[in-house]
Amino acid sequence: MKRYPLIADHGLVGDLQTAALISDEGVVDWFAAPRFDSPGIFSALLDHDRGGYFRLSVDTPDVTVKQLYYPDTALLVTRFMSPDGVGELMDWMPPDRTGRRTDRHAILRVMRCTRGTVTFTLECRPRFGFGRNPHETRLDGRTATFRAPGIAAFLQSDIPMEQDGPYDIQGRLTLTEGGLAGAAFTVDGPEAEPPPLPDPRAVETALWDAVEFWQRWVRTAHYRGRWPDMVHRSAITLKLLTYLPTGAPVAAATLGLPERVGGERNWDYRYTWVRDGSLAVRALLDLGFVDEAAAFTGWLTDRVTERASAPAGGARPLQIMYRVDGDPWLPEEILEDFEGYRGSAPVRVGNGAADQLQLDIYGEALYALAQGRGLDTQPTYRAWQAVSALLDWLATSWDGPDEGIWETRGGQRDFTFSRVMSWVAFDRGLRLAGEFGRPAALDTWRAARDEIFAQVVHRGWSERRQALVQYFGGDVLDAALLLIPRTGLLGPTDPLWLTTLDAIEHGLVHDSLVHRYDPVASPDGLRGAEGTFSLCTFLYVDALARAGRVRQARFTFEKMLTYANHVGLFAEEIGPSGEQLGNFPQAFTHLSLIMAATTLDEALDAQDPGNGAGRGGRQPSRS
Image 1 (tube, rainbow, N blue to C red):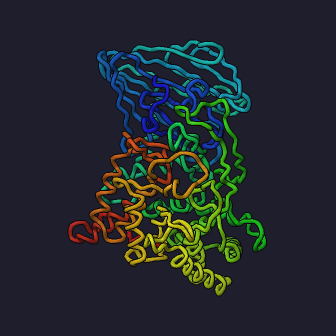
Image 2 (image 1 turned 180 degrees about the horizontal axis):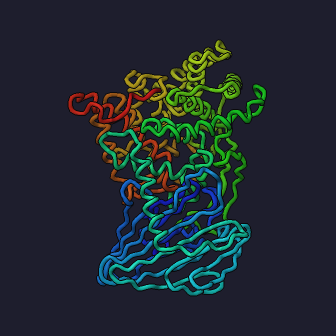
Image 3 (image 1 turned 90 degrees about the vertical axis):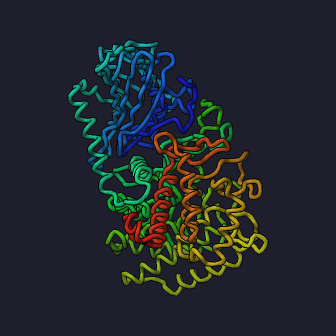
């Protein structure tokens, strides 16, 4: 067992309320329950000695391991090929179908021998509350019970088990060709009793039931473009990262995985960002996943509505992120005892950026709510009152510095992208008011929109760079501005935009990979550098395709796909040696992959309509 496998050496399984990472050695080294944002139970990826893990592996010397997803599903298959035989491990979590919050969640693991003879080794070493909460362990035949404050867990397996010290369980089982065994790790409330021992036939039924669930869902996708495997994998990943009871997606399944190994850029991403979720709406609608898009817009409307009574100039109408149930309380603390992934400390839980002022989120929120036109819905009276109050507040608040989209901790500035998205907020608000005949301060909103436009093209412009730049009065480039053609503030072939695109290409793009910005030129309050940002690379593809640079866009897209891991997943960043860095898998990366693929398909079809017409399976995206 590697002490710290590569971040990319993992697959993701989940049940639409929480998720687990499983390494290509068959080790569950990240699992938090009962929700994405709960304390970790298996956290060895953040501290091998203190974090805990659940291993099912074949320890034969010279074993070769391969990992894949069962096609169009979230069921992970790990194959162990040794001189003595071939073993196979299938991992999954039964997907939630009710949408009701529950404390019970199970990781199901089925082992089989397909050739010769293989010996599976089991180690189950839970560490509750990131190892801070002690637990009791009791072994009774085929069931091990673990109890800690506020939670109980049960391990049930065909493998003969024995207690290893006061807290852990281990076992070994040799299977011959055709042999089959299983293990289930179930968490539940503190008073729960062990579930009935799983019947082999029931486990097999559950397996094929999960296969059918995922494949049936994927079949509803409208995508008929050139990259179905990657687009479908990204869609499945987005669904796995969405908390079904509320429809809120988390930014990533993990916390603390570094943007630079050994550095301090280690954040908790298990929350719902208004920005990320709002952009996901467009990606989901492009694929035809209307229910998922509607669920998030409903969640977002609730967030807007709950603060609608704040007077103009008073409390902010939105926080930049929330817990999946809408709770705004995300205090940041440090796991002092955790060494971090390969020494990347501090390991932070919670997110102190939640209290930042990021004015771009109002544009992203209105961008998402305006997509309701694609859902054949219109805002309710109460929802419109909330949206109107939000825009009235923004009309008095947009013209000032903030922390910006990248949540820098180096002080507030007049960020150009924040102005761009404030323009989007008023533009979409005006469209909605006009389309649905809603009462609104139209003159005030229109004046704000027009003044923001003038600021962007004048104060956000650098003569030296011949480009729109990160903040007013500066010369620093910012890849967030690659979203401008999607917003409609400038057309994709406007000369002001094309020279900006050229400047980004020359200043932030390295072998097709895109940096967010240059932290040396624009200090962000943190030490060290970071890798290229995968979201930005896919936004670059989108912008190139819209600008008519289709050949370059396709080459960049195809190269970027080679950085996916062995099962098609992406983290947040790509490091200098091509390694994946940051929290994993990253929803922002996967939603932008979908956006880039659908835009690129549309551009390629337009170039050769007789050969590819309709392959994208979608209408031109609305701005």
